[in-house]
Image (cartoon, rainbow, N blue to C red):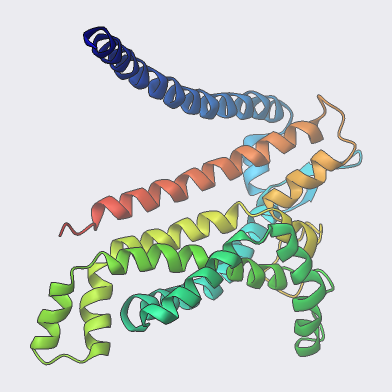
Length: 301
């Protein structure tokens, strides 16, 4: 009996010693993976800028990667990315926030059990399905309303991206709203405030850091979306504010180059990494902004 207890204690000590080391190895692997991605992008991007001037890449309004007089201005891709992301957030922010407020402040437990799974289903739909939905369902409806709309355009995928992002905004915003103590609600109600006044003047301001962080993360998600814009926005590299025209985003350009005949070592091949690096930087900035907002305006209860 004593021998068994000693073996049990010895085994527990071994486990206690190994677990921290295993967790450390897992953490280091994730860091090394990120570093490897960054090093790969940087190395190939530097090769690209040996052939294309840095200023030309970030200020050029023409992207014509094929032919003898190839031009590599990234502004058309930035314009397509920002336009689609702005449209997506115009759709996702009000609907997602209103959904979160309803679930947190007004919905009964029975309704919440029905609505929450529906939101989770939206979040689980593959983006390629959203892409075909934008191309074959949303675009024909929009063309019936806006006759001058191109068969592939930036408006349709932007709207569908917004629909896709709604669950993220709603879920994160609801978590922030639910974290507000009930004592604040009860205090406001006790002072004579209505339910609507409590929601907008007490609960929402108290949860503003989490709500804004959900918006920023939603924008980051929209910037990095690939399949919806690849399928529904076309491949025209237009530098324009016209939402009815076909435009291309950074992610769609990456898909086009990787799926085409870009010889390894060519300027076209290296442009893939330059665009990917630009996308990486923008996504990183959005994530850092979200973390800053969460820390800056977080309320401790």
